[in-house]
Image 1 (cartoon, rainbow, N blue to C red):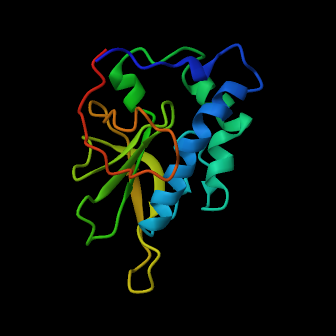
Image 2: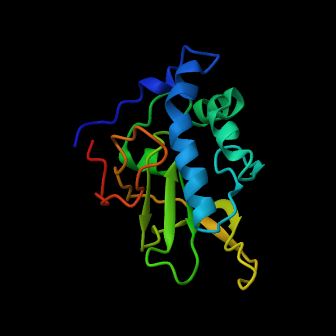
Image 3: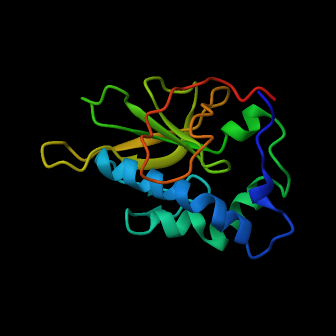
Length: 172
């Protein structure tokens, strides 16, 4: 698999206009998927800020989030699939869900359902379930070290089915 296109990061674009245009549909899909699966967004892996269903799209698309992400990338493209994987945030879904985890990469916007946790945990946390019959508990968002699905590479609209096949590894 070829190296992903990172042109939306445009390190010379201080206004983050390329970022905003690129990431908005991905952020909308993330918000819809979390809402549909009764999972609160919780803390942003990149910024550490608490986000809600009402603020997650604008937060991810905003200049401040873009600038923090570029800073954490040391103003360079990810150097390996493992480096890119450090920016993947995961949420645990309801116990009855057939695929228990939803993953979102803050650099590429790629996202997918999975049944397996990555090898290590991350720093961000998110409440597990919003339904009245579920106990509100906080779960750690997971940050994979060596696995990332490249599903959603042809994302055009936020309303399409997010349950795409998972392909392991970015391969560059």
